[in-house]
Amino acid sequence: MKTPNKSNKNKEVNDFINKRTLSVAPMLDWTDRHYRYMARVITRNAWLYTEMINANAIIHGNSDKLLAYHPQEQPIALQLGGSDPAALAQAAKIAAGYAYNEINLNCGCPSPRVQQGAFGACLMREVALVAQCLNAMQEAVSIPVTIKHRIGLDKETAYQPLADFVGTLREQTACRVFIVHARNAWLEGLSPKDNRDIPPLRYDYVYRLKQEFPDLEIILNGGVTTNEQISQHLQYVDGVMVGREAYHNPMLMRSWDAEFYGSRQPAVEYDALVEQLINYTQQQLAEPDNSLRHMARHYLGLMHGLQGARQWRRMLSDATLLKNNDAGLIATAWQAVTNSSISQSVSI
Figure (cartoon, rainbow, N blue to C red):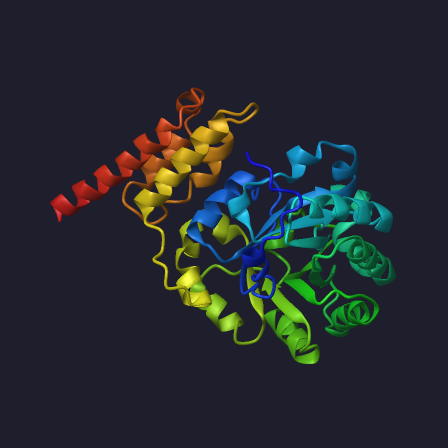
């Protein structure tokens, strides 16, 4: 793993600052640096977000282990969790030294563990504190500070509390990018998993925010699974953030650069992608504390929809095969996919 130059100011990357048309959501235990590297090979333009990292962990822990990433991952945003303005400012300042392009405050996670720390979605009840947190971070860094939140809490169904929350932050902070998960967060009675599925989606609330606050950059998140849905949402908001579908079916992102960014560069071919992942994995395995199992788990959905996808998943999740930490297993799994495709063509 490479640590970006802490004084680097990459103009080409900074040109992406106002182009959050598409992004991959921060997902705990999923969007680590190994997943993000793969995603960046597939899409050159979409924004990538880290897992939520507790501000105190950055301050008191190993910042290199928590914050270092492959330079190719940019544009990349760090999502912070916390509710202490001073701690968040200190963590943001540390993170800015790693050339992150954005710092994002989590006000959307409903997990009980996060609630015990008095941050995440429960912060939506304390807009004054959220404003203090955003202002403290923005004073500490020169890069954009943004927020990710829900449309509401528990069984509140009215639109106005959401508009009041956003409007207050618009007036009291410099934050101009609001990433809005279009579901309520139920702080009691639902697990974090259920909170991603059971509260109904209200895309119309996110659309209304953009209408009411046209000067803000409004990014819609929640339940997006197809590029057709993305196109529909982009008629009403500035950007779309995709979560679980981008993880389980990462080649969904393959057309993003051409379809949504107007790129003329050809989309990555499967064989070229596999080759890059093999090279990356070999490099990572040369460093301590890395394992093929930890990296390969992110690759399981790559062949979604292809002949041989089952063999690919089976081989890259086989504990016996993975324990050797041999990146050649990826090549072997890819050969099984290509052999299946050849066999299918012959049979037809």
